[in-house]
Image 1: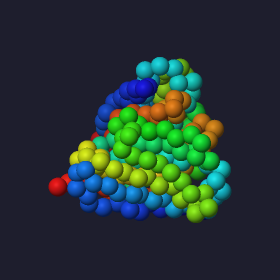
Image 2 (image 1 turned 60 degrees about the vertical axis):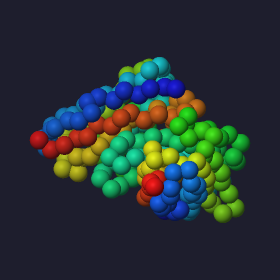
Image 3 (image 1 turned 30 degrees about the horizontal axis):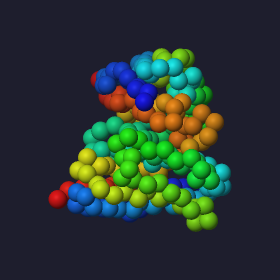
Image 4 (image 1 turned 180 degrees about the horizontal axis):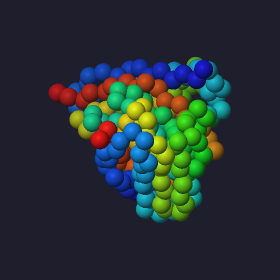
Length: 119
Length: 107
């Protein structure tokens, strides 16, 4: 069974940093691209970042570029999101999502981890 | 970036109704259009991928169609478990984007 489990969320002050982790199991992690998607309270989904299976290709939404860094460790079956210079508007539930590859739908999602940026 | 305009933003319907949700892209996305269902407190779940392909395990009352810039999700006969929020998602460009969502409520 495919499982994605996020961790690392919490309360942080504006300007602070946080590192999210997503532990994957139940599939050949090193053959799948991965994404982070976030959802502010009561709002819609926003794609945040993409990393290819071998970390060759990395992309970010303009809203986080220069502040967030995505990475992965295929030996540990994990993908990470290092977030710095956090802003109040980064407050959201952060999901990791597996990229199916062909049509690039996100076929499996974690349960999400809440990041709250507040003074 | 490709903008996705989803309509309506909310919809009231009854059990057994046929419902249609639309999504328009700001440029052609060559069927790289996916639909998700999200229930309160839960993660999104893919229903349709590649505009018209039904995800395994998803009931056949869900269907997708469209091409170019215009896409549609149809639920042929609403069931109680279908009341949720639906999102379209374009995966054609380097920078993915989602529609703003359609909240489907019971009339």
